[in-house]
Image (tube, rainbow, N blue to C red; front, side):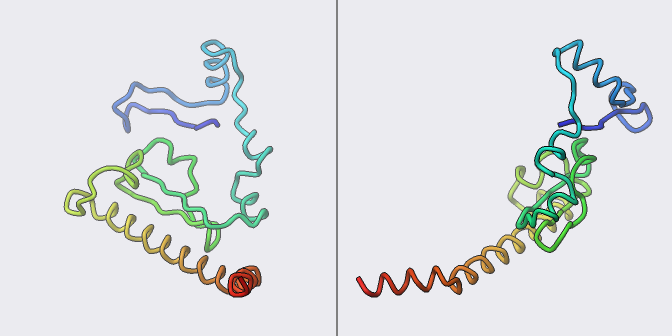
Length: 148
């Protein structure tokens, strides 16, 4: 997986380091003896927007702390009703999953995002339970249990 992350002197506390695939390739070959393959996930697994939708992938929640450098490669927009992105404008790495659970200690967008995630997961679980209850297999299992 290749992340296109670089720094400029104006917007970062880090020394300037422009990003390019040529620089990354040279760095990885020199330091680790490997060549980056930035498109391998997409080519092999179709793990991109079009591929996920084409494969009818569903019930995936993507979260992004927008102050995290990794967010540049994240899915930041909903792809479908069940391929959903939740962004945290003031969030950083894993602020959606870790950090204080006391809402008074988080920023408003972290609290809103966590509330949205909880509501979505509850909805998906409810829909899944209802679909299972209405499935022919579920009815057959009930009949088998009743006959025993």
